Image (cartoon, rainbow, N blue to C red; front, top):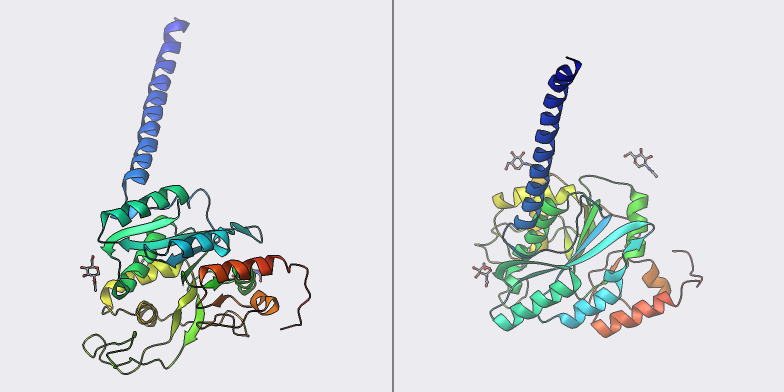
Length: 308
Ligand SMILES: *[C@@H]1O[C@H](CO)[C@@H](O)[C@H](O)[C@H]1NC(C)=O
Ligand SMILES: *[C@@H]1O[C@H](CO)[C@@H](O)[C@H](O)[C@H]1NC(C)=O
Ligand SMILES: *[C@@H]1O[C@H](CO)[C@@H](O)[C@H](O)[C@H]1NC(C)=O
């Protein structure tokens, strides 16, 4: 009698347990399936699980296929810094597609070796830089909204990730934050021979909203989703930094200074260890120069610098 009563209690419990375990396995494997297969048209995705291990700062570097020496130099210098002030930093390169299969294979092998390439299938030319930047915004939106901050920079830059991290921690902003070398009163250049030529068809107005130089700007990660979302309603302009500025204007986000002193330089600077310890970006740096500057800085750790 007691025996059969127990059966009435245990069988339903056992059944429920089985259903629970099977559903769990299904959900887990479905999650796995989605994570592995949902590439959203990306040709390459980097090796990172932002949900498990959210980075403090993600650096997205626009780069093209031929710039292997620049990518190698960046991996050996600022792009190789993985922990700064106890925070996780990750550097990824943004690439499009080239015409030749040989280049595509080389980039795919490079991505497999280093796990740091984000690539989509658009023609990789200067005129498509806005598409490249929007690919970065889309990647953050879909795959890494857990990051605290994102930086977009170029492959001919010096980036002081240590000073940048210190300043971001001090600034203590979490949302709707955007900073860099701020350009106010910018206007379209109508001279056809200029690299920055913009036709009246492309942009009929005679002023740009405030924007930050594409050589290096930094934002709280929520801005990536906001910009990605609003970008479809903004007229396309080839200058990616101006395009992002137009998105920010629409979102009513104003670029802000990171520090009272200028720290983002969209031009070149004469090198000294003390100067480069207190800047975030410097432009026009060739790979061998980047390596030289970096080792000079590493070797000057204990050096006293005048207050800035
Ligand atoms: C930019 O990429 C798109 C998509 O691949 C392509 O159709 C377009 O021609 C490219 N632009 C230029 C200027 O090559
Ligand atoms: C950072 O800001 C938050 C509010 O957004 C505040 O609670 C916290 O104390 C601040 N931390 C520092 C170090 O200023
Ligand atoms: C995206 O933009 C649409 C309007 O274009 C807006 O309704 C929606 O709230 C936005 N979503 C986010 C997450 O900002």
